[in-house]
Length: 298
Image (cartoon, rainbow, N blue to C red):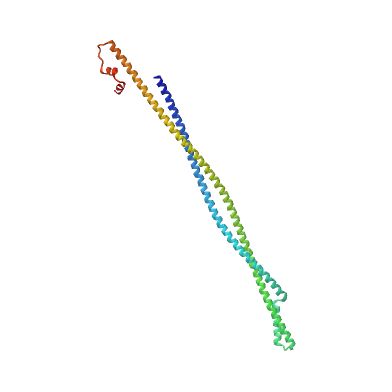
């Protein structure tokens, strides 16, 4: 009896210890599950942030592509304008040379030449001149007419020179505007490149953090799996200890029943020995000669 009591006490202590250990492991496992839940929430935030940055980088790359195409077109137009500028400068140089040639020949203004021509023509028509004088007048008129033609040509060339200068100024202004626009777009592309570089770095950092979180989640998941397996072992031990406890308790109860039966038998035997003529009751007979199991079942 004392041995069974000692075993029961020890088993109760072991059962309590197992229950406490199970409680501790379950708490740790629950904490790990909470940690994983928090990590997954943080991971979702980081993934969303990374997606936003990727979208921004994609938009900037598309914008950069459009700006590069625009700057390519502007540079092509600028090359065309520069070629046109060269042509005008070349033409202007030739016209200036030609103008200098005419101006070196024509010293008098057009109106002076015209007045002189009119005078000579009037004189020729209204005066009777010697043949030699008339011949000189005709030659002079021819010379003045040629000079007048050159003067008109010089005037036309001068006008064209002014027009070419005006076109040059216009082209230079346009070139300046194009260059300014190209520089502005180039600066914008540089700014976009800088931002894309920042985004790429931040995206890489976020990917690294997400990778770190995945490793933590994997580590915690493995620990949870180990704890779950350990809990199964602890529950198996607990069931085994409970079975042992129940079996010992049943054995103790059986021993107690046997002890009481033996006590009752002893008393009946004492009564029989004291009074041999006394008849035993059916219950007393069963107690004396019945099997323990039969008496227990009754």
